[in-house]
Image (cartoon, rainbow, N blue to C red; front, side, top):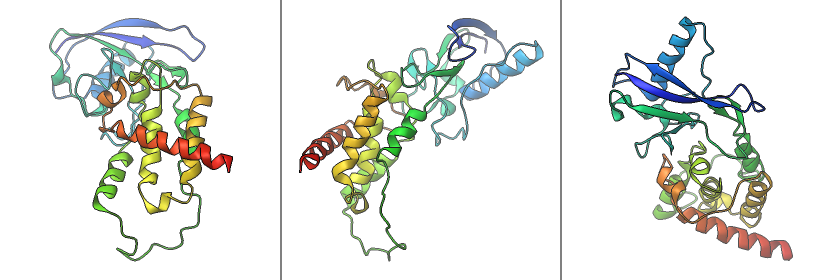
Length: 249
């Protein structure tokens, strides 16, 4: 396959940045999208050019590092996968592909396609944990959890924190991410101890870091590679209200 690539190049967070055109031949349909970028970087090395910086780690759809807008879609045109799981067979010979970083005030560009997503870490530090001594691991079945609650908690815990929800939202809202992290604890007994404060603390930190509010357009759910549902946002909002009343006691 031969491709025409338009890729965002930016030296650092202070650089203005611009789109740069590249032509790339010899791309196999069986390559992953990141392997295609590897081929391009090898070509740039041979030509004494500056390699394109992009995030990647596990390349198995688990870590959430591969954060690319591909033709305007977070993680590209195939639903339910991350960029590292996207294969070039989803494109045609001669296609033009536009590749950009996540664009959000709270995700400043580090270089080229890499962004700083440490804002998510700050939100988690505000309340996304269990802060009590739970002792040794209990015997199996000593704490009974309903099947439905367990399944919903596992669904929420599938969030890999890639930031596609933020990148897809016109307000750069992080509500789907925060809601998933609230839900994975709110649905289980271990998360009840600090439930009154968790959602409010995490949402306040989200607002402080510059993420926008929910637009109710569901782009976040549509682009989430792990299928996190909007229902989690409703659960988080209930937690915020409970937190406000708890703070007034």
